[in-house]
Image (cartoon, rainbow, N blue to C red; front, side, top):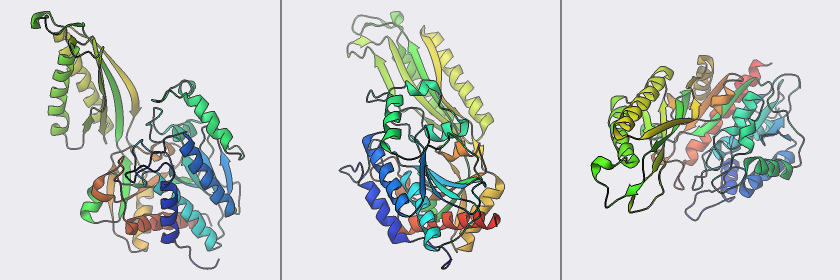
Length: 415
């Protein structure tokens, strides 16, 4: 060993700039959606950088990519550091990529210092965390945790008409590396991510110690009425699904978040069919994104939504169907993992605060496999999933340094 491993902020910043050029948008963001040519280009670049440093590269059937720095004992489960490289259609350059490239910087810092370790350390690049092209999100980490790819995923079509199974095959074949098993034993999992909210920046705290991830429920509500002429149909003869939808949303917007400061209620998509200006629609479909850190409260809110929908639709003479698209219960990270991250920040003189993640991340599924923890970096104005997303260089360096310090603490435990 030539000295204690340390992050090289200049190298990490250069890598962030380089990867932001793959899928760069005119407004400074990134469009590098899952399993596209841009996603494959980013994976190939990272694999090449790993090989240049002497790290091994593997890929599993879900196109999860693993970059491994060997330990003295190959039979010990590795420590995994990871995140994702795919983005939203008009995403930022830090969401996901910061976690991957900071994890790779940790591997390079260990290699620079010639640090020997008992167990291997691997960087994982999880497939399709965003879920913007193919739903659901976090596909790669879900498949890894379940050790299987659900067959229905393979037939799914993206917004661009692409078939997931075909794009997955193209991605796997495009990178000629050895195959990894879909799921294998791991010692622990660490993930660095931007906060995607305003709390840390507002308090000028460089490190967020994530205590858990709130639960997420995605619902698709479809209301069926009767198409009719807009100009000739009196109110008493209308079975108007749009009017029912408006009544439902008025009630839910007015009660769910105002009644619980921890609740999050969002309608992100709404459509009417047949979609004519001068016709009462036959059906209206909209989505609900419901989140809460308490599983019991989340269930109660879901029941409340169903009750409101049923009551309004019955009064309006409309049919109703409710379909669950995503149902992810909340998770609390182990207390010893939270404390390990806090201690790592203290050792290198960085202030931290505990925080709950409002967004879901790959760590939600890796926590089903092994002890997991997350570190948050502040982002400017709390903006994410946006081309204006930005993280100051000092916060990038702080987050990566805590990730390295936590990694070293795990490696010390294995001695």
